Length: 344
Ligand code: DAH
Image (tube, rainbow, N blue to C red; front, side):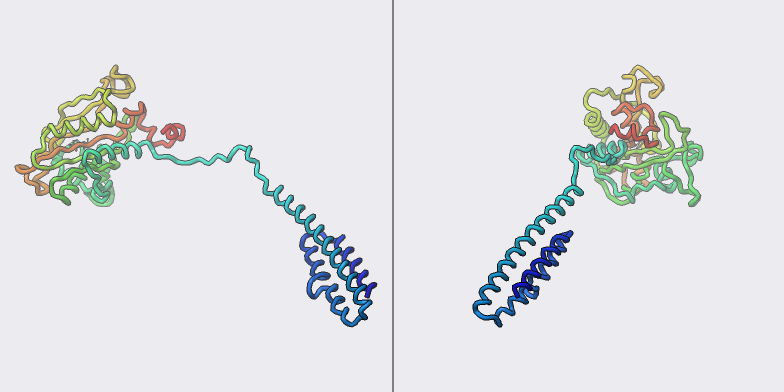
């Protein structure tokens, strides 16, 4: 039995020498030291020996177990360290390396201008009409007829307005003013709404004009609304949007759906009022049209003009953004040049 034990030990040590991984070490432990392992099998046979032999062989078996255990542990630790080192080397991160460039988008300047203007009007008590009351594809009925625009008005001409092939009277809206009609059809006064959105015009494109752009329509209808209210609200809007120091002027004007009508100009930021290409040498840029809602328009939607009055306005978003940020070409908003968009 002694010899047997020594043989077992030798073969275990030899196997351990050839072991190449933690797994191999575990397997060797299993073969020799587990409950069903070779050493245990020998220990089971001890009971058949004389007391004297039992002592000798028993203690030898224990010694061998201990030595083997020790050798296995050493080997295990060796491989454990080795495998850990390999893993750490593989997963090593060099925190001093420069990061990967991940480009991220940002809000388009037109969107942020619309958001800014919307917030100003919300603080002045206006709410935004739901989008279904402000469609980009409109009938002539809402884009012109209900806004008191005469049948022979030049704006109706295909030279100015895009007609669709959907039906004879369906257009890409040329103004957001149709939203006024939708709003008044759906709601009784008091009405205090704005409607931001895109409009389309058959224009020759240049630095000042594009064939689509954005407007924000506004409408306030209630009892006793006067031109003074119109001036008060719009002056307050301009003061908040541009700050105190930007010269503005009211000019009288004409729109079929308002009487009286006005336009507001803001001093050209590009030339500080001296006159340049952008303001056609006038020193001023028009930012909005406005006026008291024409009684015909109120009557058309069933609102009694003897009881109610109102004012309306429509402002050009690109103009307002150009004047705030000194952008001298409207096309910059639409050709998606990252160098331009990045600045906002
Ligand atoms: N719709 C006009 C345009 O596109 C702007 C406008 C003028 C809107 C007067 C209004 C208004 O609501 O009252 O030129």
